[in-house]
Image (cartoon, rainbow, N blue to C red; front, top):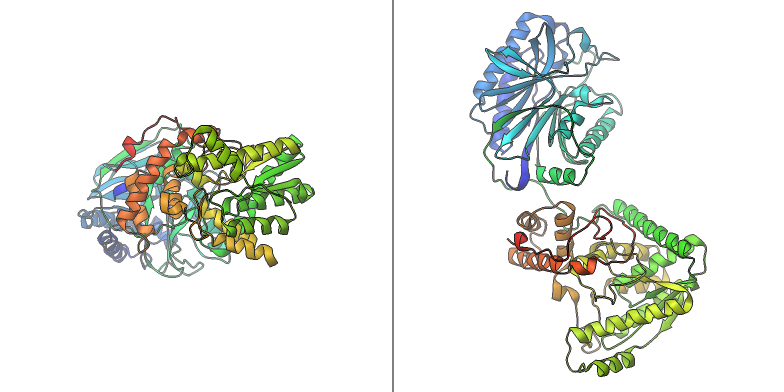
Length: 628
């Protein structure tokens, strides 16, 4: 599929033990169904042609002959399908019997991958029949042709370089050193596991955890297919518990004790992007790459994308995340306060979202240190654009939290400054706006000097991405507690604090959440905020979406646009999304110089723009190649 997406399928047929012909017919039917539904890979269970529970029948030549003949039949009947099909069967080779995965495509047997770890404990006694895979890759005569045979094979799709397939079988995953580790280190972005995992109490949860964690550890997609109905119930029960995971997330999971096919669209470009950032993800072994070719399938994606990638959708998870973030922010600030041994911390409190969150963090930090909240000096600095609503909320916050409070009207100072530089009060340009922001920062810095303290920055990650900050104004501080908090998350952190507050404090926090985002640098109209940030630079929920997929995933603008159209379907039309994406890209590149000299601040999430940490970019870089 385009943009690195690939539809994969996990299929469990209802088989009969030792009925190779009947089982193969069901495998073929399911493979055709999966292909019709756009799947490029279909993974069937371990030993699915014969059934996993054949026991000593595996030593019967008739069964082994039938398995080989029916594999030949499957290859013939699926040669017109545009997908890779993985089926399990016993294979005689090198004087031994091997539990194998056969990888087939377009009528060719691409290779046979034998199981490395053969369980022989508890209910398993596979060593009675099967030989463990050897370390070396060999070629064997199978079905009348030479076929690659070994565990160290990566199947690589020509025309889609992100599509590299590795294979392991059941117990291989449950060991201390699964083969999938080396497969991934040597390039495999998808791991297929053909399994026959029986059910006992509690095993499903452990199995689910194992598959998820392996996909996360390997930065890969992981397709796990298990045997189900039809296997012998003489001693064991199999549930057909199938899963498709991507980097620790379950994209699809079957209902246990059923048969059928599950699908998911995995993002292989995402996997490659994650690996490119991890310099420890390096392979050293010699693996053989078997090439095959499939057409790119331009299908409608069967997966959804959250409008708020920085914000958990589950309320319980969101509350847990908010508490953790506030603790990280407060711990960072408390540590800096202890290290510098300051007498106070100074915050410009506007009554807006960002400064409110900074005050919340400062309060939590002082409580951690068991210091008087009066050591926090909150300063409101009304000027030409300040409204009664925001000024009142700032006063209520300061009083409710019990911090020191100063009300310093900077109108006279700014007016004098404008006279000094020849700035007309009638010209509401960038100088008119930024002059106020820089005056506020000067006041805060001087109060910090006067009280033996330092200034806490209030700007957030979204503003840094857009460069929506006055250089050497609100852009600067001694410690920027919100520097890695995107605007969409700032709202939820403030709402979380409101939920745990009461009285006037809760009322003020809720009103702040309901107040339009604004720097309040232009005169109000009829007492209301006239300058709304999102009217000027675009919706923050869009910009945070763009930021996540550009910086975190390294996606192209074209792909980001595609994902945004899915995520915001019914919210914004395509032209609106495109307009603000172009705005984001233009500002992101042109405003890097502001991010190159940012103050210290705690890293909270996986996306930050600190020039000392996760994002290093020359200020002179252009966005020519990022247009679309």
